[in-house]
Length: 180
Image (cartoon, rainbow, N blue to C red; front, side):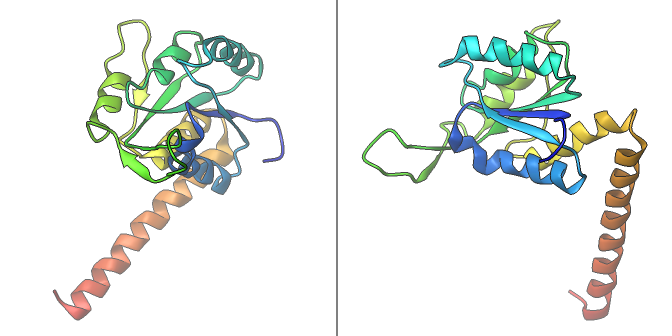
């Protein structure tokens, strides 16, 4: 996106991109510039610390961090910054290390391991979490953080809420007219 990024989107691996793209699409729909990167808490710990400093100097309003399995990325990035971190627990991973088989596999605990890892941060290192694979909600939540000080983002979010409301009313009318 053009313009200075206001939100950072990070993930531990390219296999997380299929889920994290929903956060980017939400931000794009609201016209919010974002920066997307792969930062692994386990394989690139120095890059993680560098990224946190970059996010601070870039004045990001929030960082959306997607992670599967042990899901240390959101908590580790939160330990390096005062910027709000929104964790996205990821259920599936891409097994790209074997024989060229790039099929997606479910995590051993169906994403519950990631959800618990993100939500059970120790006192003093908070991370907010959305549901498993709910990156769209993470994008919306990041926009809500921006909306506190940005009236155009607030208006765009209000329009989304109105559209959701109208869609439910229309759906209800259709159900009533055709019955169950």
